Image (tube, rainbow, N blue to C red):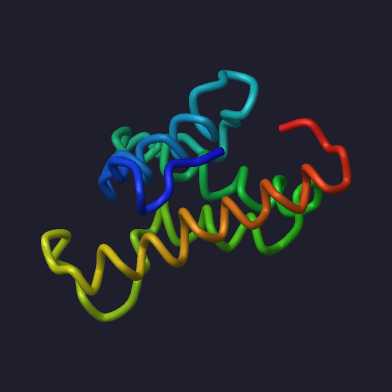
Length: 112
């Protein structure tokens, strides 16, 4: 189970990095269209963004939306990672959502 509020919380950057790495690390996920010759540092982002659409067909749109929020760092109008409001929003929109999805998968006996 993912860490909850009673445990040391993941930092927002760790969540974003974790999701992006899981989605973009595999060479099998990267496609030529993901590689931007002028902006090579964006390749992992493009790969993860495209792969989230693929994940939606398997894990559903709710999971894809959680991933989108992570890779686009979209947690509302506050953009300062030190602000409690942003931390609460990211916890609600990512950690809580992933815990809920994990529980649903568990109920349907889907191994994660």
